[in-house]
Image (tube, rainbow, N blue to C red; front, side, top):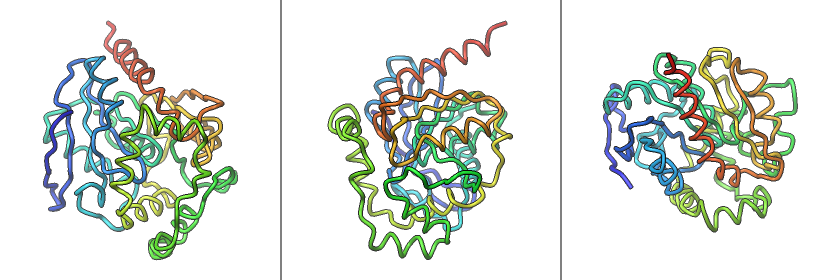
Length: 279
């Protein structure tokens, strides 16, 4: 599907990078969910190839061969991606993220405003707040609650926690058995990354290191109305916090099935790019 390489960052860490290496219409940087390795996923690549779009993905610290970074914030992703883009000779790009990748996609838009021209987030976590019940509607909020208490608490939680199958709707399981089966396999490969998962949850439940108002690029939020992992209340919170966002709410979708919108959201990015380039 593409090539993989190990990029050495300025601080000496290794970042595992995956690149289709093809596509002249647009380049997108993909931010994976929790847990994933960062490897390229077949349905994303197929939809991108059909639209002449290049896809670059990477493993966040601790995932898929990338060096861990305890204490990282959501904002930390922006500098990693800046170095990644520079190394690959990429100027402008779109930032896309699913679930735990959503906040990191937004971080790039906030902190690399001269590079990111559009953002798509699927079932993204919103910044922690007490303005609404941040955990309400989650089938299993244990990881994020432990993350709110700090890294040691989250690691202790992860040592005994098991995945709650009620987190996924029947339509999610159907999607994992068909179109997005590669995601399920990749999540299995990343499931041993306990420290990386802990670092993700701590980062989500702590200050992100940037304000949503700094995201000036257009943002598309795709959200399943029946999501039991990251409830629709998070999408609504993001919508109200971002200055230039729209929400595609799909009432019957869950956490995984919302990814069936990937082809449509890539079309949205292409249309956005054409509007920006119009004289």
